[in-house]
Image: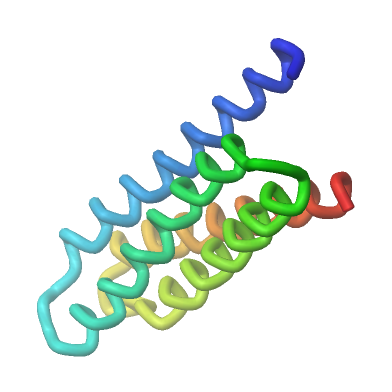
Length: 121
């Protein structure tokens, strides 16, 4: 792997890590009720899984393993976006802005992993 590819991999590792951390910070600000608690659990799992699977992809045993992990990354990013959509906070503009920003980031990450798949398949 060239140094440029290492830098790109590191950037994506950092970006997915940052996404998971921002999701956790967002969830901490939400009011507590049974619906939000259950949706938040799903969101936290999915958002953390994106980066964890990307790290696994970079340690893949072969191309097939790499592609499977990247597909999982894309799937988990899509799932994160789904849970974020469910958590719309129209009654609190600050939280809604943050949620919307996280949703956009989930979409961008989904698109990045989709591009990696197209390039590698």
